[in-house]
Image 1 (spheres, rainbow, N blue to C red):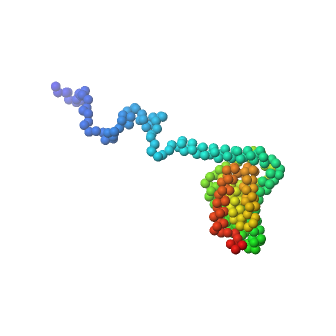
Image 2: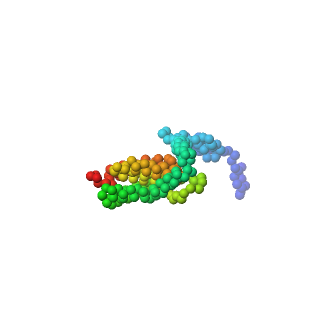
Image 3: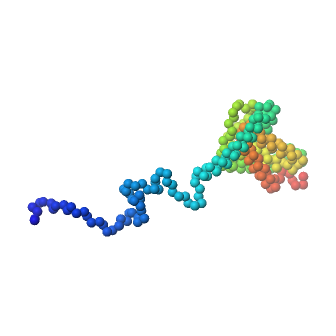
Length: 246
């Protein structure tokens, strides 16, 4: 039957045929969870499911745990040594006087430069020991108080009570101790005369004073002393303060 003029054709009730061309936007290996609009969350995004790690890599939590164990050992060492100072040395007038004086004398390596000048006078070599000691200590300070401290940036101990004597407090990192490094560095440079053992005794006093006055943690002092002693041996072999024939 023909439709009246101006009337639209009747709509067909049959569904359109399925396309025989696959949708290129969905990969063949995709699961229903990967198809947009499927309503099923992907296992890679579900809470509690983690993607496998590449063999040979470590999870961040494991690295943090190892680092925490190492720091715990250092903190335990600091706590034990600090307890010894607290129980046997701090608060005793004689010990405080010696330690605060030694710490102050170590500022800017003043005591070591004075001893180098004295060594030049005793040996008859004039200004040579002082000039060499000044140049070498300047290089050592630039390395330890500059590059090494910048790599760590450790906080200094907090004073739990007012200090019995005035003392300069540096603003640089606590690790390692610059006083301890300079002390053992200088002892290595100066030890070529008969007073060698006394230089190391003085170096140990200056270094330990930094833990006594709570400017450094004990581990800072140990690390600084070891670093300074090693650098001192290198400097002494390359640039001795005294001429070899003296």
